[in-house]
Image 1 (cartoon, rainbow, N blue to C red):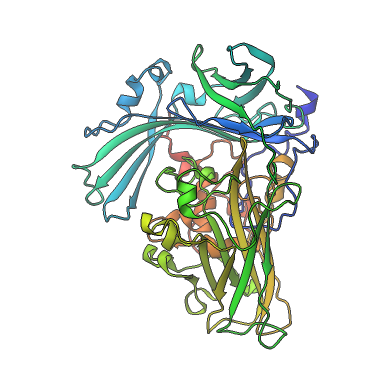
Image 2: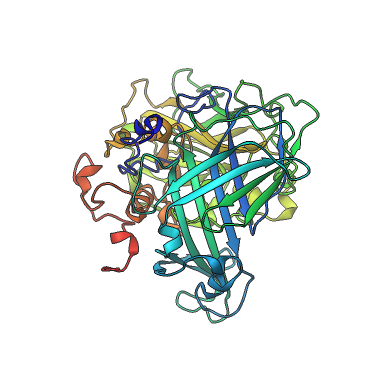
Length: 531
Protein backbone atom coordinates (compact mmCIF):
# COMPACT_ATOMS: atom_id res chain seq x y z
CA UNK A 1 0.00 0.00 0.00
CA UNK A 2 1.19 3.53 -0.71
CA UNK A 3 2.49 4.71 2.67
CA UNK A 4 1.57 8.33 2.02
CA UNK A 5 -2.02 7.27 1.66
CA UNK A 6 -2.16 4.48 4.20
CA UNK A 7 -2.61 6.81 7.17
CA UNK A 8 -5.93 7.92 5.66
CA UNK A 9 -7.40 4.43 5.88
CA UNK A 10 -9.05 4.88 9.25
CA UNK A 11 -10.54 8.29 8.47
CA UNK A 12 -11.89 6.92 5.20
CA UNK A 13 -14.44 4.69 6.92
CA UNK A 14 -17.11 6.75 5.28
CA UNK A 15 -20.27 8.24 6.67
CA UNK A 16 -20.10 7.68 10.36
CA UNK A 17 -22.91 9.39 12.10
CA UNK A 18 -26.01 11.45 12.06
CA UNK A 19 -24.07 14.65 11.62
CA UNK A 20 -22.66 13.99 8.13
CA UNK A 21 -24.86 16.79 6.86
CA UNK A 22 -24.32 19.09 9.76
CA UNK A 23 -25.45 21.63 7.38
CA UNK A 24 -25.85 25.30 7.95
CA UNK A 25 -22.74 27.01 9.23
CA UNK A 26 -19.58 27.01 11.30
CA UNK A 27 -17.18 29.82 12.17
CA UNK A 28 -14.28 29.63 9.73
CA UNK A 29 -11.71 32.39 9.62
CA UNK A 30 -9.21 31.06 7.10
CA UNK A 31 -9.38 29.45 3.69
CA UNK A 32 -8.38 25.82 4.15
CA UNK A 33 -5.23 24.45 2.49
CA UNK A 34 -4.80 20.78 1.69
CA UNK A 35 -4.25 18.65 4.78
CA UNK A 36 -0.48 18.41 5.36
CA UNK A 37 -0.04 20.05 1.97
CA UNK A 38 1.10 23.41 0.59
CA UNK A 39 -0.69 26.36 2.10
CA UNK A 40 -0.70 28.19 -1.25
CA UNK A 41 -2.33 25.32 -3.16
CA UNK A 42 -5.66 26.00 -4.91
CA UNK A 43 -8.39 23.43 -5.38
CA UNK A 44 -9.71 22.78 -8.90
CA UNK A 45 -13.38 22.21 -9.71
CA UNK A 46 -14.48 20.82 -13.10
CA UNK A 47 -18.14 20.62 -14.14
CA UNK A 48 -18.83 19.27 -17.62
CA UNK A 49 -22.37 19.27 -18.95
CA UNK A 50 -22.88 17.31 -22.17
CA UNK A 51 -19.14 17.25 -22.71
CA UNK A 52 -18.36 20.94 -22.32
CA UNK A 53 -17.96 23.67 -19.73
CA UNK A 54 -17.30 27.43 -19.85
CA UNK A 55 -13.66 28.52 -20.08
CA UNK A 56 -11.71 28.84 -16.83
CA UNK A 57 -9.72 32.00 -16.13
CA UNK A 58 -6.56 31.38 -14.10
CA UNK A 59 -5.27 34.18 -11.88
CA UNK A 60 -1.54 33.67 -11.52
CA UNK A 61 -0.19 30.13 -11.45
CA UNK A 62 -0.39 28.65 -7.95
CA UNK A 63 -0.10 24.87 -7.44
CA UNK A 64 -3.42 23.08 -7.86
CA UNK A 65 -5.14 19.84 -6.89
CA UNK A 66 -8.38 18.22 -8.05
CA UNK A 67 -11.21 18.63 -5.55
CA UNK A 68 -14.49 18.46 -7.51
CA UNK A 69 -15.19 16.62 -10.76
CA UNK A 70 -18.68 16.32 -12.22
CA UNK A 71 -19.36 14.74 -15.62
CA UNK A 72 -23.05 15.12 -16.48
CA UNK A 73 -24.82 14.15 -19.68
CA UNK A 74 -28.54 14.87 -20.25
CA UNK A 75 -30.58 13.45 -23.14
CA UNK A 76 -32.86 15.68 -25.23
CA UNK A 77 -36.44 16.00 -23.88
CA UNK A 78 -38.98 13.48 -25.13
CA UNK A 79 -42.62 12.60 -24.47
CA UNK A 80 -41.98 8.85 -24.16
CA UNK A 81 -41.65 7.52 -20.63
CA UNK A 82 -39.06 4.80 -21.22
CA UNK A 83 -36.80 5.11 -18.19
CA UNK A 84 -33.14 5.59 -19.12
CA UNK A 85 -33.32 3.65 -22.39
CA UNK A 86 -32.45 6.71 -24.48
CA UNK A 87 -29.41 7.35 -22.31
CA UNK A 88 -28.25 3.75 -22.68
CA UNK A 89 -28.54 4.07 -26.49
CA UNK A 90 -26.86 7.50 -26.76
CA UNK A 91 -23.32 7.65 -28.11
CA UNK A 92 -20.79 7.45 -26.62
CA UNK A 93 -22.53 6.32 -23.42
CA UNK A 94 -23.93 3.27 -25.17
CA UNK A 95 -20.37 1.91 -24.91
CA UNK A 96 -20.64 1.75 -21.12
CA UNK A 97 -21.42 -1.58 -19.48
CA UNK A 98 -25.04 -1.07 -18.37
CA UNK A 99 -25.56 -4.66 -17.25
CA UNK A 100 -27.04 -4.95 -13.75
CA UNK A 101 -28.60 -1.47 -13.71
CA UNK A 102 -31.73 -1.17 -11.61
CA UNK A 103 -34.03 1.55 -10.32
CA UNK A 104 -33.43 2.05 -6.61
CA UNK A 105 -35.76 4.92 -5.72
CA UNK A 106 -38.55 7.21 -6.95
CA UNK A 107 -38.99 10.79 -5.77
CA UNK A 108 -41.91 13.23 -6.24
CA UNK A 109 -41.78 17.00 -5.66
CA UNK A 110 -44.24 19.80 -6.27
CA UNK A 111 -42.98 22.46 -8.69
CA UNK A 112 -43.65 26.19 -8.38
CA UNK A 113 -46.23 26.05 -11.19
CA UNK A 114 -48.37 23.51 -9.32
CA UNK A 115 -47.27 20.48 -11.35
CA UNK A 116 -45.00 17.74 -10.06
CA UNK A 117 -41.52 16.55 -10.86
CA UNK A 118 -40.86 12.82 -10.71
CA UNK A 119 -37.35 11.45 -10.49
CA UNK A 120 -36.26 7.84 -10.76
CA UNK A 121 -32.72 6.93 -9.72
CA UNK A 122 -30.74 4.05 -11.21
CA UNK A 123 -27.63 2.35 -9.84
CA UNK A 124 -25.69 -0.92 -9.94
CA UNK A 125 -24.67 -0.86 -13.61
CA UNK A 126 -21.28 -2.50 -13.98
CA UNK A 127 -19.69 0.78 -15.06
CA UNK A 128 -21.01 2.52 -11.95
CA UNK A 129 -19.59 -0.09 -9.58
CA UNK A 130 -16.25 -0.65 -11.28
CA UNK A 131 -12.86 0.79 -10.39
CA UNK A 132 -12.54 4.26 -11.91
CA UNK A 133 -9.70 6.60 -12.82
CA UNK A 134 -9.70 10.12 -14.22
CA UNK A 135 -6.64 11.84 -15.64
CA UNK A 136 -6.41 15.58 -16.31
CA UNK A 137 -3.83 16.81 -18.83
CA UNK A 138 -2.69 20.39 -19.40
CA UNK A 139 -2.34 21.14 -23.12
CA UNK A 140 -0.96 24.12 -24.99
CA UNK A 141 -2.58 26.09 -27.82
CA UNK A 142 -1.49 23.43 -30.34
CA UNK A 143 -2.94 20.58 -28.32
CA UNK A 144 0.41 19.32 -27.03
CA UNK A 145 0.27 17.82 -23.55
CA UNK A 146 2.43 19.58 -21.00
CA UNK A 147 4.18 18.10 -17.99
CA UNK A 148 2.82 15.63 -15.46
CA UNK A 149 -0.97 15.08 -15.47
CA UNK A 150 -3.30 15.15 -12.47
CA UNK A 151 -4.56 11.66 -11.63
CA UNK A 152 -7.64 10.77 -9.61
CA UNK A 153 -8.42 7.28 -8.36
CA UNK A 154 -12.16 6.90 -7.74
CA UNK A 155 -12.23 3.29 -6.55
CA UNK A 156 -15.29 1.05 -6.44
CA UNK A 157 -18.82 1.86 -5.31
CA UNK A 158 -19.07 -0.92 -2.73
CA UNK A 159 -15.49 -1.19 -1.50
CA UNK A 160 -13.79 1.89 -0.06
CA UNK A 161 -10.01 1.83 -0.12
CA UNK A 162 -7.25 3.99 1.31
CA UNK A 163 -6.10 4.41 -2.30
CA UNK A 164 -9.30 6.24 -3.28
CA UNK A 165 -8.67 9.95 -3.78
CA UNK A 166 -12.16 11.27 -3.05
CA UNK A 167 -14.27 11.16 0.08
CA UNK A 168 -17.48 11.31 -1.99
CA UNK A 169 -17.98 9.02 -5.01
CA UNK A 170 -21.44 8.92 -6.63
CA UNK A 171 -21.97 7.44 -10.08
CA UNK A 172 -25.55 6.89 -11.20
CA UNK A 173 -28.29 7.75 -13.67
CA UNK A 174 -31.65 9.38 -13.21
CA UNK A 175 -34.81 9.98 -15.22
CA UNK A 176 -36.52 13.34 -14.67
CA UNK A 177 -40.18 13.85 -15.57
CA UNK A 178 -41.43 17.45 -15.46
CA UNK A 179 -44.99 18.71 -15.81
CA UNK A 180 -46.72 15.75 -14.14
CA UNK A 181 -50.27 16.83 -13.36
CA UNK A 182 -50.36 14.94 -10.06
CA UNK A 183 -48.46 12.23 -8.26
CA UNK A 184 -48.82 9.06 -10.29
CA UNK A 185 -49.84 10.90 -13.48
CA UNK A 186 -47.06 11.85 -15.87
CA UNK A 187 -49.11 11.27 -19.02
CA UNK A 188 -48.44 14.82 -20.30
CA UNK A 189 -44.92 15.17 -18.95
CA UNK A 190 -41.58 15.66 -20.68
CA UNK A 191 -38.78 13.24 -19.88
CA UNK A 192 -35.02 13.43 -19.88
CA UNK A 193 -32.48 10.94 -18.57
CA UNK A 194 -29.14 11.86 -17.11
CA UNK A 195 -25.81 10.25 -16.38
CA UNK A 196 -23.86 11.59 -13.40
CA UNK A 197 -20.24 11.01 -12.41
CA UNK A 198 -19.62 12.95 -9.17
CA UNK A 199 -16.36 13.01 -7.21
CA UNK A 200 -15.39 15.51 -4.54
CA UNK A 201 -13.26 16.26 -1.47
CA UNK A 202 -9.74 15.14 -2.30
CA UNK A 203 -8.27 13.12 0.56
CA UNK A 204 -4.75 13.11 -0.88
CA UNK A 205 -4.29 16.74 -1.86
CA UNK A 206 -0.92 16.81 -0.11
CA UNK A 207 0.55 14.28 -2.54
CA UNK A 208 -1.51 15.21 -5.62
CA UNK A 209 -0.73 18.93 -5.86
CA UNK A 210 1.17 20.24 -8.88
CA UNK A 211 1.87 23.46 -10.75
CA UNK A 212 0.55 23.52 -14.31
CA UNK A 213 2.63 24.94 -17.13
CA UNK A 214 2.26 28.67 -17.76
CA UNK A 215 1.56 27.70 -21.39
CA UNK A 216 -1.60 25.80 -20.46
CA UNK A 217 -4.37 26.71 -22.92
CA UNK A 218 -6.82 23.96 -22.02
CA UNK A 219 -7.41 21.01 -19.73
CA UNK A 220 -8.34 17.59 -21.09
CA UNK A 221 -10.04 15.00 -18.89
CA UNK A 222 -9.94 11.31 -19.72
CA UNK A 223 -12.20 8.82 -17.94
CA UNK A 224 -11.22 5.16 -17.73
CA UNK A 225 -14.76 3.96 -18.50
CA UNK A 226 -14.76 5.64 -21.93
CA UNK A 227 -11.23 5.29 -23.33
CA UNK A 228 -10.56 7.51 -26.32
CA UNK A 229 -13.05 10.19 -25.23
CA UNK A 230 -11.80 13.40 -23.64
CA UNK A 231 -13.60 16.31 -22.02
CA UNK A 232 -11.92 19.62 -22.80
CA UNK A 233 -12.17 23.06 -21.21
CA UNK A 234 -10.34 26.16 -22.40
CA UNK A 235 -8.05 27.97 -19.97
CA UNK A 236 -7.48 31.70 -20.06
CA UNK A 237 -4.81 33.60 -18.12
CA UNK A 238 -5.88 36.90 -16.59
CA UNK A 239 -3.75 39.81 -17.76
CA UNK A 240 -4.80 42.18 -14.97
CA UNK A 241 -4.45 41.65 -11.25
CA UNK A 242 -7.62 41.94 -9.20
CA UNK A 243 -7.88 43.39 -5.71
CA UNK A 244 -8.56 39.86 -4.43
CA UNK A 245 -7.46 36.33 -5.24
CA UNK A 246 -8.06 32.68 -4.38
CA UNK A 247 -9.46 31.29 -1.15
CA UNK A 248 -12.68 32.11 0.64
CA UNK A 249 -13.52 33.39 4.11
CA UNK A 250 -16.92 34.29 5.49
CA UNK A 251 -17.57 36.26 8.67
CA UNK A 252 -20.76 37.33 10.42
CA UNK A 253 -21.07 40.30 12.76
CA UNK A 254 -23.90 41.53 14.97
CA UNK A 255 -23.90 45.26 14.16
CA UNK A 256 -26.98 46.44 16.06
CA UNK A 257 -26.94 47.05 19.81
CA UNK A 258 -29.66 45.92 22.23
CA UNK A 259 -31.90 48.77 23.33
CA UNK A 260 -31.04 48.05 26.97
CA UNK A 261 -27.28 47.79 26.12
CA UNK A 262 -27.14 44.34 27.73
CA UNK A 263 -29.12 41.78 25.76
CA UNK A 264 -31.79 41.64 23.07
CA UNK A 265 -35.40 41.11 24.02
CA UNK A 266 -38.33 39.50 22.17
CA UNK A 267 -39.71 41.84 19.51
CA UNK A 268 -36.36 43.53 18.75
CA UNK A 269 -34.64 43.27 15.39
CA UNK A 270 -31.06 42.01 15.11
CA UNK A 271 -28.98 43.52 12.32
CA UNK A 272 -26.24 41.26 10.98
CA UNK A 273 -23.48 42.02 8.48
CA UNK A 274 -21.99 39.34 6.23
CA UNK A 275 -18.45 39.89 5.00
CA UNK A 276 -16.85 37.86 2.21
CA UNK A 277 -13.07 37.82 1.73
CA UNK A 278 -10.47 35.87 -0.20
CA UNK A 279 -7.95 33.60 1.51
CA UNK A 280 -5.68 36.55 2.36
CA UNK A 281 -8.48 38.52 4.00
CA UNK A 282 -9.08 40.94 1.12
CA UNK A 283 -12.75 41.95 0.63
CA UNK A 284 -14.65 40.59 -2.37
CA UNK A 285 -17.14 43.47 -2.57
CA UNK A 286 -17.56 47.14 -1.81
CA UNK A 287 -18.81 47.83 1.73
CA UNK A 288 -22.59 47.73 1.94
CA UNK A 289 -23.20 46.28 -1.51
CA UNK A 290 -23.19 42.82 -3.05
CA UNK A 291 -23.71 41.85 -6.71
CA UNK A 292 -27.30 41.94 -7.93
CA UNK A 293 -29.15 38.78 -8.84
CA UNK A 294 -29.25 39.97 -12.44
CA UNK A 295 -25.46 40.23 -12.53
CA UNK A 296 -25.26 36.68 -11.20
CA UNK A 297 -27.70 35.28 -13.77
CA UNK A 298 -25.82 37.08 -16.58
CA UNK A 299 -22.50 35.63 -15.34
CA UNK A 300 -21.16 39.10 -14.55
CA UNK A 301 -20.08 38.44 -10.96
CA UNK A 302 -16.31 38.61 -11.16
CA UNK A 303 -15.68 37.84 -7.48
CA UNK A 304 -17.27 34.39 -7.82
CA UNK A 305 -20.05 34.57 -5.19
CA UNK A 306 -22.87 32.18 -6.03
CA UNK A 307 -26.59 32.74 -5.48
CA UNK A 308 -29.69 30.54 -5.53
CA UNK A 309 -29.89 29.07 -9.03
CA UNK A 310 -32.76 26.57 -9.51
CA UNK A 311 -32.96 27.28 -13.24
CA UNK A 312 -29.52 25.83 -13.90
CA UNK A 313 -28.97 23.36 -11.05
CA UNK A 314 -31.57 20.61 -10.54
CA UNK A 315 -30.17 19.07 -7.38
CA UNK A 316 -31.35 16.23 -5.15
CA UNK A 317 -30.01 15.05 -1.80
CA UNK A 318 -27.37 12.33 -2.19
CA UNK A 319 -28.05 11.65 -5.86
CA UNK A 320 -27.42 14.80 -7.83
CA UNK A 321 -25.32 17.96 -7.61
CA UNK A 322 -26.40 19.14 -4.16
CA UNK A 323 -22.88 20.46 -3.56
CA UNK A 324 -23.28 22.87 -6.48
CA UNK A 325 -26.20 24.72 -4.93
CA UNK A 326 -25.00 28.24 -4.29
CA UNK A 327 -27.75 29.82 -2.23
CA UNK A 328 -26.46 32.08 0.56
CA UNK A 329 -28.58 31.55 3.67
CA UNK A 330 -28.54 33.53 6.91
CA UNK A 331 -30.39 32.23 9.98
CA UNK A 332 -31.00 32.93 13.67
CA UNK A 333 -32.13 30.30 16.18
CA UNK A 334 -32.24 29.64 19.90
CA UNK A 335 -31.96 29.29 22.73
CA UNK A 336 -29.17 26.84 22.07
CA UNK A 337 -30.11 24.47 24.89
CA UNK A 338 -33.49 23.86 23.19
CA UNK A 339 -32.22 23.23 19.65
CA UNK A 340 -33.44 20.00 18.05
CA UNK A 341 -35.06 18.82 14.84
CA UNK A 342 -38.05 21.10 14.20
CA UNK A 343 -41.44 19.44 13.87
CA UNK A 344 -42.86 22.29 11.80
CA UNK A 345 -43.12 22.00 8.00
CA UNK A 346 -42.43 25.22 6.12
CA UNK A 347 -44.91 26.11 3.40
CA UNK A 348 -42.75 27.09 0.43
CA UNK A 349 -44.85 30.20 -0.16
CA UNK A 350 -43.39 31.70 3.02
CA UNK A 351 -39.93 31.76 1.46
CA UNK A 352 -41.09 35.01 -0.15
CA UNK A 353 -41.59 36.62 3.29
CA UNK A 354 -38.94 39.22 4.24
CA UNK A 355 -37.87 36.83 7.00
CA UNK A 356 -39.16 33.28 7.10
CA UNK A 357 -40.23 31.81 10.44
CA UNK A 358 -39.14 28.17 10.43
CA UNK A 359 -39.56 27.09 14.06
CA UNK A 360 -41.76 28.34 16.90
CA UNK A 361 -41.77 27.83 20.65
CA UNK A 362 -45.31 26.44 20.51
CA UNK A 363 -44.54 23.80 17.87
CA UNK A 364 -40.82 23.15 18.29
CA UNK A 365 -39.72 24.43 21.69
CA UNK A 366 -37.44 27.11 20.27
CA UNK A 367 -37.44 29.97 17.74
CA UNK A 368 -35.79 30.11 14.31
CA UNK A 369 -35.95 32.48 11.33
CA UNK A 370 -33.93 32.68 8.13
CA UNK A 371 -33.63 34.52 4.83
CA UNK A 372 -31.64 34.34 1.64
CA UNK A 373 -29.02 36.71 0.27
CA UNK A 374 -30.41 38.03 -1.95
CA UNK A 375 -33.90 37.41 -0.56
CA UNK A 376 -35.95 34.67 -2.17
CA UNK A 377 -38.44 37.36 -3.20
CA UNK A 378 -35.69 38.60 -5.52
CA UNK A 379 -34.18 35.29 -6.66
CA UNK A 380 -37.59 33.72 -7.37
CA UNK A 381 -39.53 36.88 -8.16
CA UNK A 382 -38.84 37.06 -11.88
CA UNK A 383 -36.59 39.27 -13.98
CA UNK A 384 -38.35 42.43 -12.80
CA UNK A 385 -36.55 41.99 -9.46
CA UNK A 386 -33.15 40.98 -10.79
CA UNK A 387 -31.58 44.43 -10.53
CA UNK A 388 -32.81 45.15 -7.00
CA UNK A 389 -29.95 46.22 -4.69
CA UNK A 390 -28.47 43.46 -2.50
CA UNK A 391 -27.04 44.86 0.76
CA UNK A 392 -24.52 43.04 2.92
CA UNK A 393 -26.68 43.46 6.01
CA UNK A 394 -29.81 41.60 7.06
CA UNK A 395 -32.25 42.36 9.88
CA UNK A 396 -33.93 39.39 11.55
CA UNK A 397 -36.70 39.74 14.15
CA UNK A 398 -36.57 38.06 17.52
CA UNK A 399 -40.03 36.46 17.85
CA UNK A 400 -42.32 37.84 20.52
CA UNK A 401 -42.42 34.48 22.34
CA UNK A 402 -38.64 33.85 22.16
CA UNK A 403 -37.26 32.06 25.21
CA UNK A 404 -34.26 33.52 27.09
CA UNK A 405 -30.75 32.27 26.40
CA UNK A 406 -27.95 32.14 23.81
CA UNK A 407 -28.94 32.44 20.15
CA UNK A 408 -26.83 31.39 17.20
CA UNK A 409 -26.68 33.38 13.94
CA UNK A 410 -25.26 31.50 10.98
CA UNK A 411 -24.43 32.05 7.32
CA UNK A 412 -23.25 29.71 4.56
CA UNK A 413 -22.03 30.62 1.07
CA UNK A 414 -20.25 29.27 -2.01
CA UNK A 415 -17.61 30.91 -4.19
CA UNK A 416 -16.44 29.72 -7.63
CA UNK A 417 -13.44 31.75 -8.78
CA UNK A 418 -10.70 30.99 -11.28
CA UNK A 419 -11.45 27.27 -11.30
CA UNK A 420 -11.62 27.02 -7.50
CA UNK A 421 -14.93 26.19 -5.75
CA UNK A 422 -15.21 26.58 -1.98
CA UNK A 423 -18.12 26.37 0.46
CA UNK A 424 -17.58 28.33 3.66
CA UNK A 425 -19.62 29.46 6.64
CA UNK A 426 -19.57 31.49 9.84
CA UNK A 427 -21.49 31.88 13.09
CA UNK A 428 -22.01 34.54 15.74
CA UNK A 429 -23.81 34.41 19.08
CA UNK A 430 -25.99 36.87 20.98
CA UNK A 431 -28.00 36.86 24.18
CA UNK A 432 -31.79 37.19 24.31
CA UNK A 433 -33.67 37.95 27.53
CA UNK A 434 -30.74 37.14 29.84
CA UNK A 435 -26.97 37.46 30.21
CA UNK A 436 -26.71 33.82 31.29
CA UNK A 437 -25.36 31.63 28.45
CA UNK A 438 -27.11 28.40 27.49
CA UNK A 439 -25.24 25.31 26.29
CA UNK A 440 -26.05 23.15 23.26
CA UNK A 441 -26.79 19.50 24.08
CA UNK A 442 -26.23 17.40 20.94
CA UNK A 443 -28.35 14.29 20.51
CA UNK A 444 -25.76 12.64 18.26
CA UNK A 445 -22.03 12.04 18.49
CA UNK A 446 -19.03 10.07 17.20
CA UNK A 447 -18.95 12.11 14.00
CA UNK A 448 -15.22 12.82 14.16
CA UNK A 449 -14.43 9.11 14.22
CA UNK A 450 -14.50 9.43 10.45
CA UNK A 451 -14.98 13.11 9.73
CA UNK A 452 -11.45 14.27 10.39
CA UNK A 453 -8.55 15.64 8.37
CA UNK A 454 -9.43 15.97 4.70
CA UNK A 455 -12.94 14.65 5.47
CA UNK A 456 -13.52 16.99 8.42
CA UNK A 457 -16.54 19.23 8.63
CA UNK A 458 -14.34 22.30 8.14
CA UNK A 459 -13.56 21.05 4.61
CA UNK A 460 -16.64 19.25 3.31
CA UNK A 461 -20.26 20.31 2.73
CA UNK A 462 -20.67 23.93 3.94
CA UNK A 463 -17.37 24.05 5.84
CA UNK A 464 -19.24 23.60 9.11
CA UNK A 465 -17.92 22.75 12.54
CA UNK A 466 -20.53 24.49 14.70
CA UNK A 467 -23.44 22.05 14.82
CA UNK A 468 -25.68 24.56 16.60
CA UNK A 469 -26.15 26.30 13.28
CA UNK A 470 -27.83 23.40 11.46
CA UNK A 471 -31.33 23.56 12.85
CA UNK A 472 -32.68 26.86 11.53
CA UNK A 473 -32.03 26.02 7.86
CA UNK A 474 -32.64 22.28 7.89
CA UNK A 475 -36.35 22.01 8.45
CA UNK A 476 -38.83 20.10 6.31
CA UNK A 477 -40.15 22.10 3.35
CA UNK A 478 -43.53 21.54 1.77
CA UNK A 479 -41.77 20.84 -1.55
CA UNK A 480 -38.62 19.20 -0.14
CA UNK A 481 -39.25 16.98 2.88
CA UNK A 482 -35.66 15.73 2.87
CA UNK A 483 -34.38 19.20 3.74
CA UNK A 484 -35.02 18.24 7.38
CA UNK A 485 -31.73 17.53 9.13
CA UNK A 486 -32.59 14.06 10.43
CA UNK A 487 -34.12 13.00 7.11
CA UNK A 488 -31.10 14.26 5.18
CA UNK A 489 -28.50 12.61 7.40
CA UNK A 490 -30.32 9.27 7.29
CA UNK A 491 -30.76 9.62 3.53
CA UNK A 492 -27.05 10.14 2.84
CA UNK A 493 -25.77 7.38 5.08
CA UNK A 494 -28.33 4.75 4.12
CA UNK A 495 -27.87 5.30 0.39
CA UNK A 496 -24.12 4.93 0.57
CA UNK A 497 -22.72 1.44 0.05
CA UNK A 498 -19.51 2.62 1.70
CA UNK A 499 -21.01 3.16 5.14
CA UNK A 500 -18.97 0.85 7.41
CA UNK A 501 -21.69 0.15 10.00
CA UNK A 502 -25.30 -0.99 10.06
CA UNK A 503 -27.28 2.18 9.47
CA UNK A 504 -30.20 0.67 11.40
CA UNK A 505 -28.13 0.53 14.61
CA UNK A 506 -29.13 3.89 16.04
CA UNK A 507 -26.49 3.81 18.79
CA UNK A 508 -23.77 4.23 16.16
CA UNK A 509 -24.62 7.91 16.08
CA UNK A 510 -27.30 8.68 18.65
CA UNK A 511 -26.35 9.38 22.25
CA UNK A 512 -29.81 8.24 23.32
CA UNK A 513 -32.30 6.03 21.52
CA UNK A 514 -34.60 8.18 19.34
CA UNK A 515 -38.20 8.36 20.45
CA UNK A 516 -39.62 7.98 16.93
CA UNK A 517 -38.81 5.93 13.80
CA UNK A 518 -35.98 7.19 11.62
CA UNK A 519 -37.06 9.26 8.63
CA UNK A 520 -35.23 9.01 5.31
CA UNK A 521 -33.74 5.54 5.71
CA UNK A 522 -33.49 3.41 2.57
CA UNK A 523 -32.69 -0.14 3.59
CA UNK A 524 -29.99 -1.77 1.49
CA UNK A 525 -29.46 1.52 -0.40
CA UNK A 526 -32.57 0.59 -2.40
CA UNK A 527 -30.99 -2.39 -4.15
CA UNK A 528 -33.11 -5.45 -4.84
CA UNK A 529 -32.31 -8.18 -2.36
CA UNK A 530 -30.24 -10.99 -3.80
CA UNK A 531 -28.79 -9.05 -6.74
